[in-house]
Length: 255
Image (cartoon, rainbow, N blue to C red; front, top):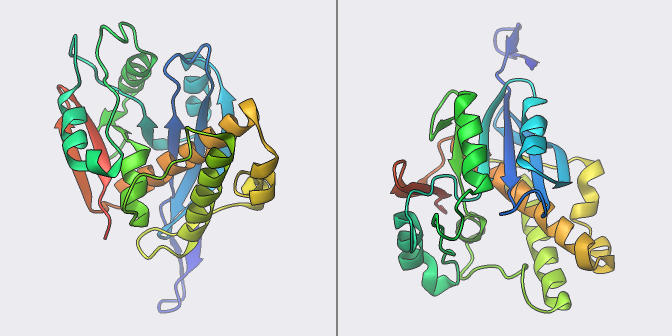
């Protein structure tokens, strides 16, 4: 992208970084995942595409590969699972830090998930040059619940996934409003295009039920993952739980 420099009177080329966020289903052949793509330029992250209801790791990788010069991916899934039982170290650390605020983790281990799609996806990305916690081309594991607490300065986890249908709709509408408000964020403004408006429209959310309500939830999660990718790119303050050998989670730290 080029812009005219007012001081020197010449056009200056600014770097555009293409990013993705993935809300990955545990069993991706049978359950839908959602992807969000964006471009970071001049300090603003613009959502360029949202793709809900994607099935299988192969199709997810295909969507990622169709994006030219994709630099980074933030994934809501356990990317490294070496432990046979119990929780990963990072999950225990998150529970100690966020458990009292309702944002602890489920357990990830090879007994529960002997051939995890998330690990397959991460290894595929690694082979393509996406380095864990890298700089030039990277992938990170994220966790939306504590990230939402930090990004929006909430006291507790935002409930929008479980419970009565009315409660899930109320939670989605709250999350949608919070995401919309990121347009004025001082650290990383988020720009939403009009053709993504349905995911944030309260009347539209009220009209949803069953699979369509779940699909909207997944889309909002993918956009949160994309925003986390943007925060990672701009070196936002963060907390890092675990390590690359045993599994990790990168969480932005609220200001």
